Image (cartoon, rainbow, N blue to C red; front, side):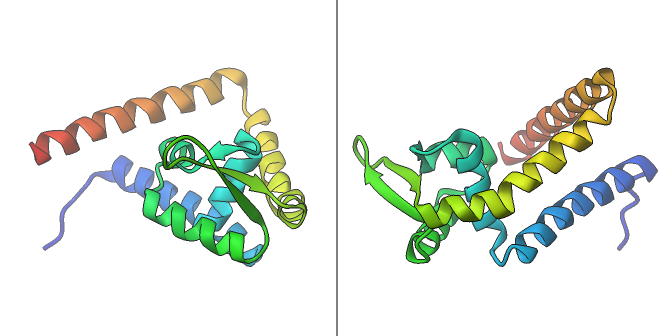
Length: 147
């Protein structure tokens, strides 16, 4: 059975998957999993000492995936963990981790920034506004289906 989504939704979904593939390619090129890439990205953005739960909330990655990826990155010598309050663990880059972030993550952040800056300010604002609106409506539809 084929469901006809409509031309615009099909294009939106294709673009979403294309964006996902761009980041997947960057992660593969850096020799790491997508989740490891996103964790290092998050630490670069949020700075040393961020919490696993903060990454989970900010990047919509499940806690189990974050935990297993952090353990993997820790075993490679990229990260260290320090106990916080309760079960919270603060994540810190080691010297080797900092080198990887400088080599693999920071250049991606600069490319993203350059791409955004090539858009007119009103275009980037509109992109954000409409994406937020779509996500909010879609999330509402999911909640309606679940309840």
